[in-house]
Image (tube, rainbow, N blue to C red; front, top):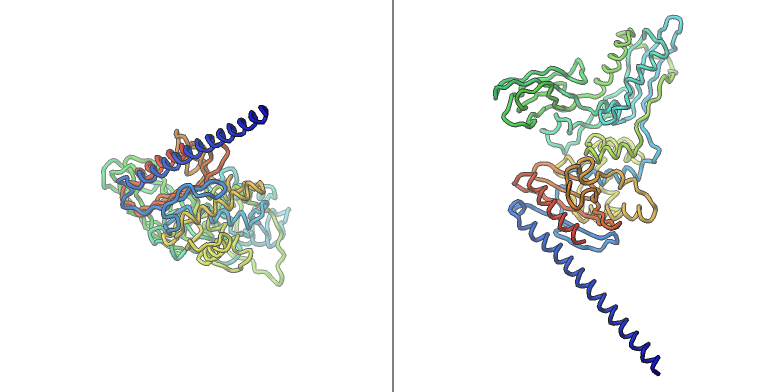
Length: 488
């Protein structure tokens, strides 16, 4: 009887202990939730935010909502659009996918006369990394020169030809005119070359309002013309802009650059990458002392082409990382078109976004998105924090259940890499946020994963139409994320 009473007492005590522990956990969770909510309220009431639109969502890795504010409202995502594009590309292109560029000859190489009897043909495939500045250890032009030296070619009876033999350089019709002449408004081309932009180097004097001088253009094409109206300005920032459209072979440069600069580089879009590629190949031949003809060798019947060189791009993983680490608009558009074209032939840069939107509406089962491009440059792109978090949960489930980490590995890390290098640096969430930033005039957004105690928390915040300094908005967001991180 005494033993039964002892057991009974122990059971009661264990129950009370468990209830006590449960109450402690419940109260702790309640206070944490309350602190997170209070942090959001403080953020929304800050003077930099009060006149802005904010959409926010925080979840745990099971999908439980921890914090939400206007999460289904549609806002401009800016470069957060690249998250949808990156995931789509990784879903559609195989891990061993590479772009191929072939150097071909339409005739034989005569070893006695050291002559290529025919045309030298460059057959491209829309590789955005061809001679790209983002992969300095790879060079198509250097590989081509090495092959020509190896073959001991001293003359070419035909011309340098770029195939496919048409121009398809295009920009999105939803991009602003003021963006098209600048490097970030470079378009899509099957003949993409050197990131489809030109580096213009300036020298500037000390006098405010004085003229500047262009000292270098790289790369250069004979048919490309610049009108320089750039002046010396008070600001220490680059406030210059270029105006011009695809196939329009002149660019007008206006605005200001800082004082007393030597070789100050401003990046502007090419008018036609095919022309720049052709001239770069011709220049490479000239540097090697190879003579080329001014007339094309006409083919008779079915033309046999010999392959002199097969050049491959970096891996798909490296290309997608460049999209997200460098917020590379040009790569994003090229990869999206390549991915969509697997199932939809002959698409253009405007149609690709339609297929991207349809895919994610079906995959995520929601309609909270309007896509106009793949990179986020269009201000007509719209999506919700909820839609972005659903994408993050989709990719997180693939990581946890299948070990598929390509998407997560393509994301910059807070305080460490890419466009997040200075976001959260020297804070509690340094190296603990994996995601993407998005910004343009009046827009500042972040979306990705907060990591704490081996748990991942999908988090998206979008701030639109603010009128204060962008730096202050970023600081207010950082303060909010610190408070959230301390209490999840």
